[in-house]
Amino acid sequence: MPKKLLPIAAMGKIMKDAGADRVSNPAKKALKEELENIARGISEKAVRYASHAKRRTVKASDIKLASK
Amino acid sequence: MPKKLLPIAAMGKIMKDAGADRVSNPAKKALKEELENIARGISEKAVRYASHAKRRTVKASDIKLASK
Image 1 (cartoon, chains in turn green, blue):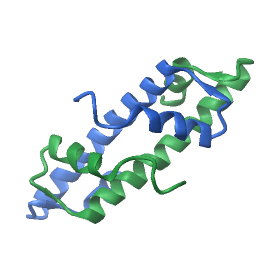
Image 2 (tube, chains in turn green, yellow):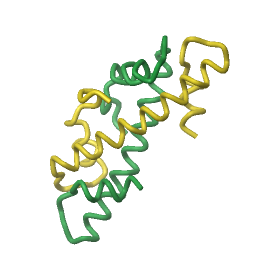
Image 3 (cartoon, helix red, strand yellow):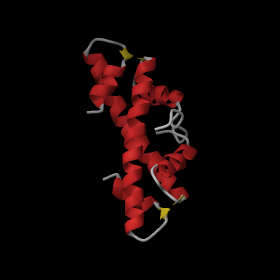
């Protein structure tokens, strides 16, 4: 997965919102990579579900089904 | 969770990378919301794991444990 998908700064913000006092840079990178992997898995499923429904457009319902 | 954590444009990019021809705007929003919820869940766990280890800094090992 390319390096520049999810912004690293957002990871610090999310962890602060969750109650973190301080966050290491490797922790931000680890969260970014985990989320990108999850996003890829959901997206690959959603693409298959759209195709199965004979659509070329991925819709919110595909994402919702893929997230279950 | 605040509106502006993960950029909506990144969601389209991730889905295109996963093979999507076209992606609806609600699909991008659905993926963004799903990822933000997952991120919050992982982060809240990671904060508890850091605290349990008597640290105030969330480290990559906390994120990795929380992602399992």
